[in-house]
Length: 143
Image (cartoon, rainbow, N blue to C red):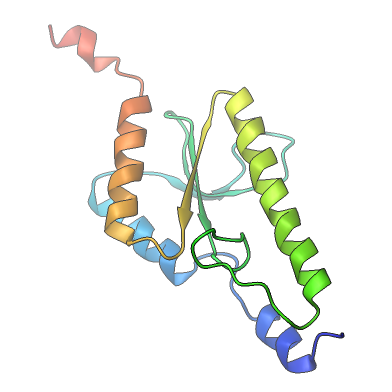
């Protein structure tokens, strides 16, 4: 079964950057006092961008859409052109696992935030992770 022109148009209009979920998360992180880079490659030679990047802490945050990344809670499998979409979504999942693995090997931590997560809860989780991984040079001086 072929994808309809309406579906093709709707899918092509889906944002891949600066989505509403991503913007709310970024505002919450900024409000918590964290500074970061957006849409950057954590590793040279790896053609994958993190949505939010904390360089010194080596934390790369990816905001994953439930549909596109096959959320275990909300993913649905389309009935139209099912083989194409299953292959596409499973390929995205494989790429996500590969990205996480490559980052881990290089000393980075990949943090996945699902689009359905409450932004303030996700921001608190990211903040805790970033703070736990930051270099703590100031600790030796405060004694």
